[in-house]
Each structure stands twice: as structure tokens, then as C-alpha cells.
Amino acid sequence: MAVHADRQRNPRTHRLSRPRWHTGVVFYVCQVIPYFALGTFSPQIMAALGVTNSLAAGATYNVFLLTGAIVGMIIVDRLSRRLFLIGSFFIGAALLTALVVLSPSSTLLAIILFAAFALVLAAAANLEFIDPPGLFPPKSGPPDSRARP
Image (cartoon, rainbow, N blue to C red; front, side):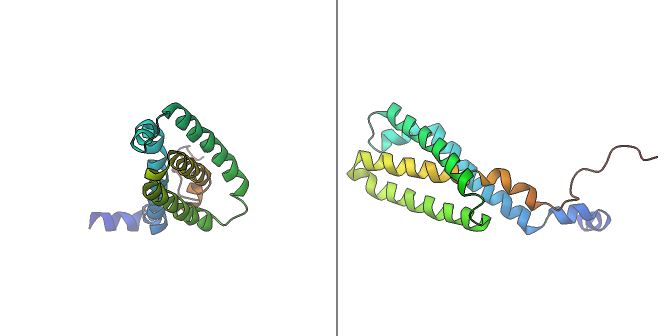
């Protein structure tokens, strides 16, 4: 009951609990966790995929992260935000599925698929800097702390 009464007194609390805010958090988490998990554990992942030269594989991964960030900057204004976000998840899922299914057959194919996933992941990460301000109403900032005359 206290929460409901607080929402009636403070409309900002009510506006911040809209579903689009929750959706934004879910998409942000779904982008950030694979990004850092794969970056942190790429040597172990490459070893599990049968790649013997983890230094070259890690360098390839980092080059494709950089390339993906540049590609993302170029296409972020050419596609709708929804298409870019959801499409990047579908492409990433397809690449990871192919990586799991096809990686035992070829080490080179594993590196290519892993690098392509890094490119898609880094391109989609551009949305992390563009979308969050649009999730909140314009007046949802902190109250003005300056004393009014």
C-alpha cells in the first residue's frame, strides 16, 4: 500500500516503472554479458574449440571488435533501432549456433565464426549509447536542488 500511495504523490516514480524501462535493462544486459564474457574468456573458449594459437585468435577477435564498432557507427542511423537491435540478436544467435555445430570440423571455421560474432556484437553495442536516454521521459531527472527566489 505504501508503494501505491508513494506513486500517487510522486508521478516520477510511476513514470520510471514503465515496461519500456524494464525492456531496456533486459536488452542492455543481453548485450553486455556476452561482450565481456567472451572477451574475458576468449583464450579458454578458443582452447575448447581446438584453436592452438590463442594469441592469433585473440588478436583476430579484437580486430573484429574494432571493425564491428566502426560498422555499427556507419549503419546505426541507416536502420531502425528495433531492426538493428533484434536483427543483431538473431544474427548473433545464428553465428553462435553455427560455431557450436560446425567448430569441431575446422579450427579456421571456428575462428571465422567467432570473429563474425564479435563484429555483430560490437556493432550492436553502439545502441548502448544511443537508446538509454530515449527510455526515460524528459522530466525524469533529479529535482532541481537550487533554491528558487
